[in-house]
Length: 329
Image 1 (cartoon, rainbow, N blue to C red):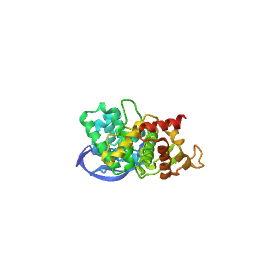
Image 2 (image 1 turned 60 degrees about the vertical axis):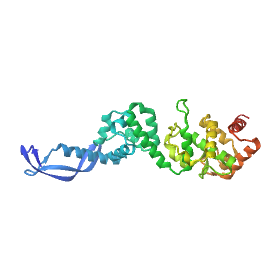
Image 3 (image 1 turned 135 degrees about the horizontal axis):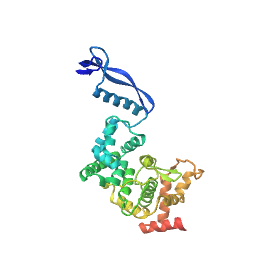
Image 4 (image 1 turned 180 degrees about the vertical axis):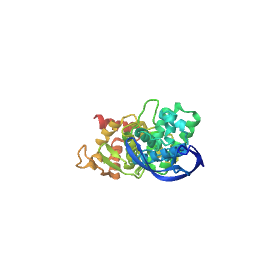
């Protein structure tokens, strides 16, 4: 291919080779493999816009890796995962489309932008962004995105009973009334679903164990699943495979939701701290001590079964009376 050589002052044949190059990005020296063209006649380097752009991308790729910033490949994976275009994604994030396009051209994103994009690999995070900003994109783009999010959530939790129980409560969030479920509250809802199912039907709703953590009973894998949300609200989940539940399981879940969802996370935490299974499992641990002791399933069963027998609890009103006894007596 002929290129213009300023040294020879004419278009001339050129050779392209891969060489070790260096540049500076944000004050740091970056070594990378780049491609340069040289005049076949005089041997001087010849500027080529396409090669220069490629070298910028190569240098930025090295810098991104060094700083653990999101790569172009990861951004492409994000778009493919959710079947979303660059423009709709930029609109959901509140960015200009040009900002996102620059990252595809090899420009280095700021760390906060990189972290925001990486967080969206979590379908619950993408769902939250969608629910907050869906009015900014077209219905067609929104429907395609929501379908992909739901497919991701369903695929990640298929066959996991405790996660399906969590999804049941998340699917019941009344967004219009301002109802909120945080990870802490979700753990308590799942705990009381298990506790009352054990008491009323003498078998577990799911097989996962609870640990006696500082803020109450916790299913460890649920904690890590929703850890990124901290104490912030979880998004409403529209995916619910009701076929995984029997009629009596669904009835119990509806009852627990109607009784406990009106209370906030801290109220439910205090209530679990007033009950024997969590207290006994903590043993000699102080209030702020880390503790991962298992709360034995049989102790949860025995404690709540005794309450059922003593107070003749058969429905939501009976559970409400029990809550009043525990928290206000």
